[in-house]
Amino acid sequence: MTIQVAIQANESNQALPSEEDLCNFIKHLVSHAFFADIADNSILSLVLIDDNLMKKLNMQYRNQKKTTDVLSFGISEMTPMGYLWGEVFISPVQAKVNADEKKISLIQELKLLIIHALVHLKGYDHENDEQLLIMQKHENELFNFISRGDC
Image 1: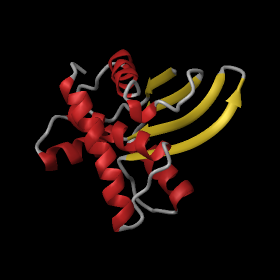
Image 2: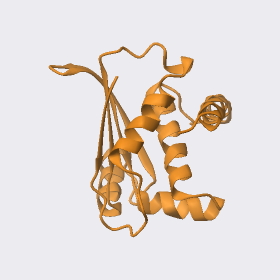
Image 3: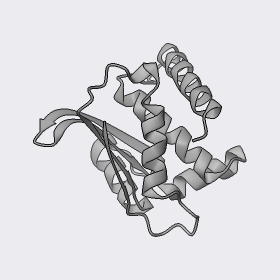
Image 4: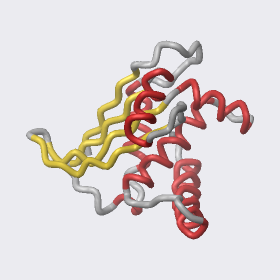
């Protein structure tokens, strides 16, 4: 899998992980059996964006007039570079708000948001209680997997 990471956010004073660290984290994460059906030539794009752009994307794609922490878009399209699996956008500002509420580090919250987004890309959602429980089960399994590793 090819992973493209870009950090475009510039409004947060928080120390963000490097593009390389995020890439390595995702590579480890997608080595889990949950992602076994993702093609080797797949491409995943992760972009850390500023909160204003996140608000615009949330309005454009979800008709929500507010910002959010993460948006994921399943693309499923062949490109000259390979199969574009999806794009994930994260607001570090909102991730920091979440982290403070949960009393965890920003890096830990970013990892949780990436897990959440990739479970969405696998086709899971949380529109009702039953879907939410299934999605949380997968997220917990993946979180435990990365917690056992060094990423």
